[in-house]
Length: 180
Image (cartoon, rainbow, N blue to C red):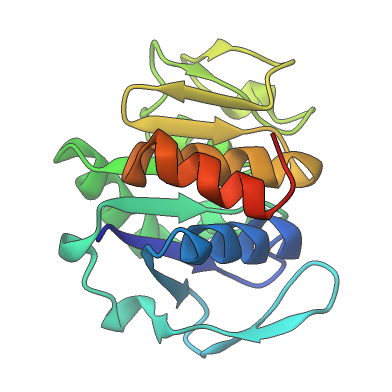
């Protein structure tokens, strides 16, 4: 079973984080939410407070198959320890996914250089070196997945399921969600 870590910080986009966690868990993947705030309780962009499974300091990212960064805020880009761990994970060949504003983190770390990517409109300038696919809901290029925004979260999450558990599991989860 694949291990996935979904990161949370103050102002995260609730739809992108919680729907992704939900879809991945429906696929029976081992998902842990990880707070970057130093506290387990994290409040999102629309004042929804959730309790993360663990703090970054407690997360064993070496056990991860994929790291997922929801959008909603640029605060992910301000957390240096998180960014260094994300970079090290990606450099070792780990799969990384970011949606909405958060592909900017990947761009700033040089992970999108020469890769196809998408993001929330207005954040294109931060996707350093990327081949922009601005009309695409989800873009997978090698071990990097990027998504455009909140309304496209289910497509983003189903893409992650397919990558981690295969087409049949993706189709089964999509059917249960009444999605094609």
